[in-house]
Image 1 (cartoon, helix red, strand yellow):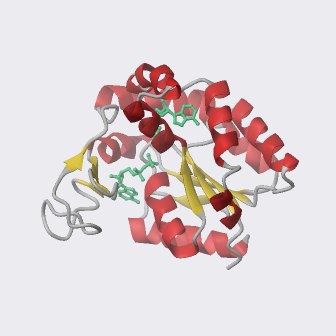
Image 2 (cartoon, protein in one colour; image 1 turned 180 degrees about the vertical axis):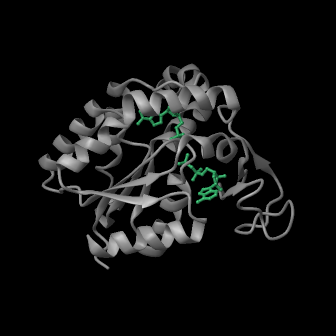
Length: 220
Ligand code: ADP
Ligand code: AMP
């Protein structure tokens, strides 16, 4: 497979973007670019971006387009992105999608595909409230759908400490879902008009979603 592809994963919080982006990264060498992860790192470091984003993220609202667009513009200039990348959690609004298109056009690097991981709202609260990650290596788990092989031990690195995101509670999930439908979902139409939209059924088991996405990637 040509590894210099650039793709966007679209879908509501908890649809499986991060889970699948990590698997695509491992399988292809394309780089996962998660704006949520970048912001959480900025919050943890107490950087100016983190100080601006912290309260907005905890409330489940969207961080301003200007801040996010600047952060992504810097990131995609990094040399590792020449291997191709998987955008996870960006763009999340029409202005972000338009800004991304301009950035890529300037570098003469078109977007190859936008993959919508479609999951209806009724699945989302259970997906999000059961989510946790390894505190050491960041591997993702779920209380019901993705348990470690040995209880309490990370499959990837053997650590035994895990963490849950502060915004992964039922009330905040509802705000995040509202933001998804009001502000983010229109980007599905944006990429459909651009002729690069593909849809996969995100209610399948995790391995089957991966197979569907790898099939789409092979066709791009
Ligand atoms: P996103 O990055 O889109 O917010 P995640 O990839 O973190 O979502 O997935 C949210 C939670 O749901 C995680 O705990 C993950 O293990 C679990 N999950 C992901 N995909 C599936 C799936 N297809 N079926 C069941 N659970 C899933
Ligand atoms: P995520 O890890 O993708 O679930 O993102 C966590 C939170 O970070 C979101 O609820 C937003 O507050 C913020 N965030 C992440 N990506 C973006 C983005 N592209 N635009 C605006 N806010 C974002």
